[in-house]
Image (cartoon, rainbow, N blue to C red):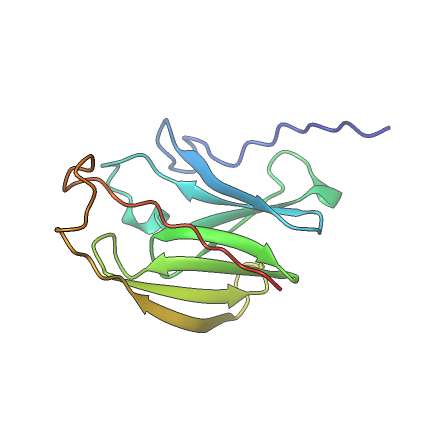
Length: 144
């Protein structure tokens, strides 16, 4: 029988990922593929890493057998839906505009723009518990 847990590192110092790099969010659909945003730690001076997604296909799981691909900006959230990867990302970390895109979930595959959402930021309604340098958590919800 196959193990139900597999340890497959997708970040490393050799790949240029600093210590503390996280995989968040980590998403899986009904297929054998799992996707994770490679989230760098703050102030690591690697802006090229802010839109990186790692994909592992557990049918072929082995150390070093993962694919990474780049989305156009910092990732807020992602979902696996109907065989596609749906992501929400911004142009930059301080942009009020969020773009929703769909891809086939493969490196170099086509990226289809689904929508743009402009966040309305109102300091008067911002919770007092959040300081100005804290971000709001954005979560993508979808249904069929």
